[in-house]
Image 1: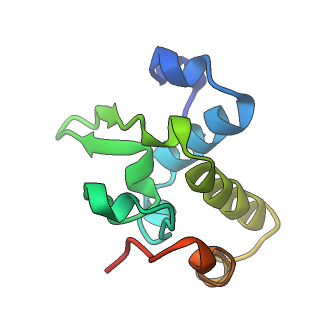
Image 2 (image 1 turned 60 degrees about the horizontal axis):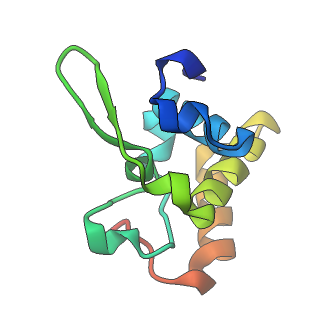
Length: 112
C-alpha cells in the first residue's frame, strides 16, 4: 500500500475506503492494470480500473493521480473487491473473473 502522506489532499480527506483503494491501486499496478472498470469511464479514455486512480507515472516514478474514483463508488467497490480477494489468497486472475461476473451488469468493460 502506498503511504497516505504521498497522496493528494483530496484523497487524504476522502472516506477510508476510498483512501485504501487509491493506496492499493497505486502500489499494485501489475494487478490493477488487468482489472476492468464498468462505470463507463472507458468513454474518458480509461483502459483499466487502475486508470481511475492513476493518470500517469513519469520516468522517475512520480505518480499523477486521477480524481475520477473520488466520486465513483463502482470504481472503489471494484478495487475493494480485488483487495479482499488478494488478501484472502485469491489470484489476480480469480479476481478478474469475479469482477467481470459481478460488475458487467453495470455496463461495458473498459478493457478492450
